[in-house]
Image 1 (cartoon, rainbow, N blue to C red):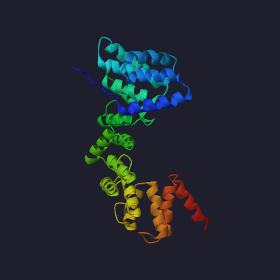
Image 2: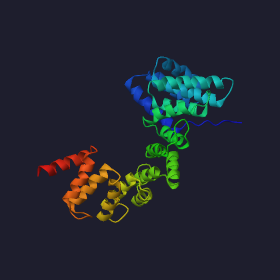
Image 3: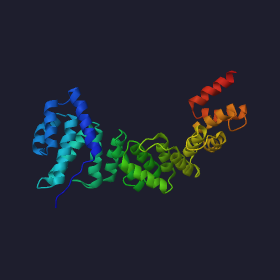
Image 4: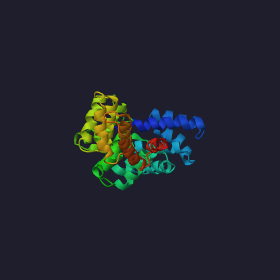
Length: 309
C-alpha cells in the first residue's frame, strides 16, 4: 500500500518565509541551505539532509526545523529507519521549538497529540500547540480549540475553544471556521458572537453585515454581553439593519447592566446627545462613572471634562 504523506501547506509556507528572512539576515549559509531545499523539493531527502543537517547541528533554528521536517517525511514513508526517524524528527523539532520557533512548536504538538514515535500525551501536545498558537500559527490555534472543546489535555472550555477557533478562522483556516460554525449552530454564545465579528469585519469570510447581525442577535438574545454590545453597534451604524438609535440604546443598556464598559460609555454618549433616549445629563454621568470605575479611559476623559464645566 502506498503511503501518501501530507504536510500542512501553511507550515511549508511558513518555513519558506522563514528561509527567505533568515537567509537574508545571513543566519544560515544561504547557498548551502538553498541547495538543500532544492534537493528536498526534488525528493532527494538524503542529499537534503547532508546539506541541511550540519547547519542544524550548528544551532541554526530554520535548519533544525527543516531537518525535523525531512526526518518526519522519511518516517512516514516507512522502511527500516521509520521509528528511528520519528525520534530524530522530534529531536530536531524540539531543538528549534526550544529556541521559540513557532512551526517547530506546532509540529512537536502534532507528534505528542498523535503519538508519532512517542506515547500519546495530550497535556504535552496542548503545551506546544499553545506556544505556537500564541505566536499566531493558525493550525495550532485551531487544534488547541479542538482540545478545549473535547477537554483533551486541558479542562473542557467551550469559551476558550471558540476563542481559539476565531483566532485561526480570521487567518483563513478553513477547519477552524468549520469548527466555529458548528459550535455556533449548536448554540455556543462565544462562537456565535465571534462568528458575527468575522462577518462584520470580513476576516476569514466575505463581509456580510446581515449575517453578522444574525449571529450577534442569537448570542445577544441569550444574554451574552459582548454580542449585545456588538448588536448595539450595528443598530447605531445601520449595518445589516436600518439605523436605529433606540435599538442601539436598548442593546447597549442590556450589556451595560452586565458591566460591559464600552456599552456603558456608548449608552452615556446617547444620553448626552439625546439619541434614542431622552437627553439626560444625570443618566450620562451615571453610566460614565460606571465605565470609568472599570478604568475605561474614554469615560474617564469625558467625565473629567464634564466636571470642569
